[in-house]
Image (cartoon, rainbow, N blue to C red; front, top):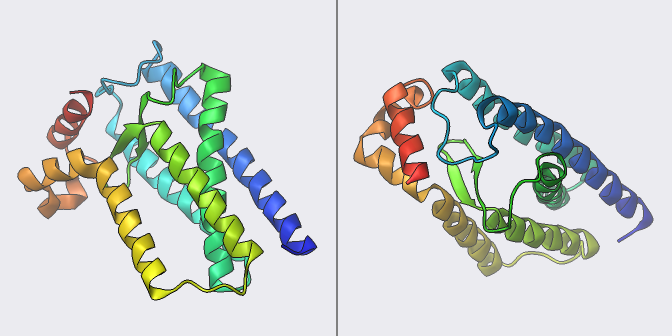
Length: 206
């Protein structure tokens, strides 16, 4: 990795760490308001729908920010991809670091968490996103350190299949719920229909 690339690698990491702290502060305030005992499950169904909707939008904005820094840092498409997964991974890991510092949570790497809300709720033990993030950091480093190397078709297929399996594992409960209840046919109502939200929250706490 050349000197300029190392400099960008460091600064993208610093950006992601700072961004993780901002995200943590939002969660810090929400936890203080709706989870004063610091127990995330069962999820609090008294949270106003307006907050849930804006949380969904905020998470989308987070991805846009990570994409933006990756586009600025990388020159070629492969480099942009590497910087995106690197920034995402650093952000994700330090999100939990800052939660531990500010809220003394999670209690362990096996503690369950709500990872994401788009397009449906993702849930898993904390260790899962940590493992994925560490793998992403390694992948980004290899891509940036060996720019002459190219992905083979089989490698691309394996990456896509692996990503699908990881995604399916964290949204399985919610996806099957929406399919069974036919909510997939009225997706626009998922974030505003109380009946849907109540069912989703119940399955998360069961």
